[in-house]
Image (cartoon, rainbow, N blue to C red; front, side):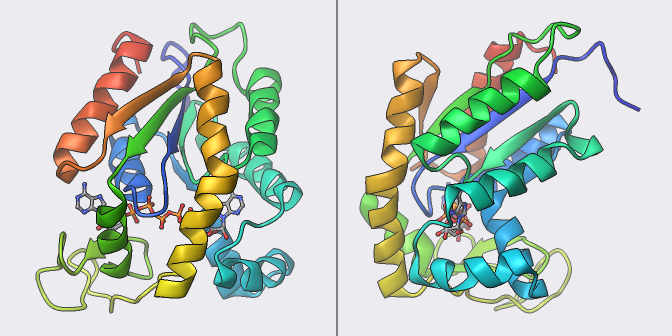
Length: 234
Ligand code: AP5
């Protein structure tokens, strides 16, 4: 049952590969009690299940390039229309091009925010900033469990080598965390996704935070931004 007295909330986490978007989105989603929507995770699930979408995305993702806007926007529309996202969501990895950002603005205005709620009708856009060398260390050391929990060999190791603390599953290296693909992903970010930050900056909506700190300190900064946006009402 959706509590209609609570404010609707749409949070967008921006930042380069390895900035900690997924790590933070999971924590913030738990705090705000809204779903974490990761386009990368949904695409990887489609690849694993061999769907049509997965078949089209597989080689593109393996090269570290972006999946076409139309495919991703359709996928996000489907996800955000599910009942669990009615009161809000934390977006991780979307939007990633100016076209996706424009599409999302229209979606939020037409389908998400409405006058029956007390929300300000704008998303909270947080840019997680991290030093380039730190990004490389985070990406090369990342290990994930099939259920989505994220670790890092150097920075956030599991208690037992290569085993998830939460569910005991064997940790794996993501297919696109190979060095040559990491370089391609970082280049795609510079060319295609940085303009998204400029887009929100131009609208006065972008709030940058320091992502070089430890996980709880980064979480605290994001929570503060959200609380200020919602006047503590979410
Ligand atoms: P996606 O899955 O979105 O990957 P990404 O954006 O490259 O981001 P990452 O998941 O690599 O990093 P993250 O910022 O989430 O960091 P994490 O929390 O894991 O996309 C994958 C692919 O899908 C794309 O390349 C593209 O092909 C396609 N795609 C997805 N969305 C698309 C879209 N909208 N349009 C088109 N194509 C799309 O953390 C990284 C590591 O650092 C972990 O090991 C973690 O433990 C560690 N860490 C995190 N925070 C800290 C901290 N504060 N201190 C120390 N360690 C930390």
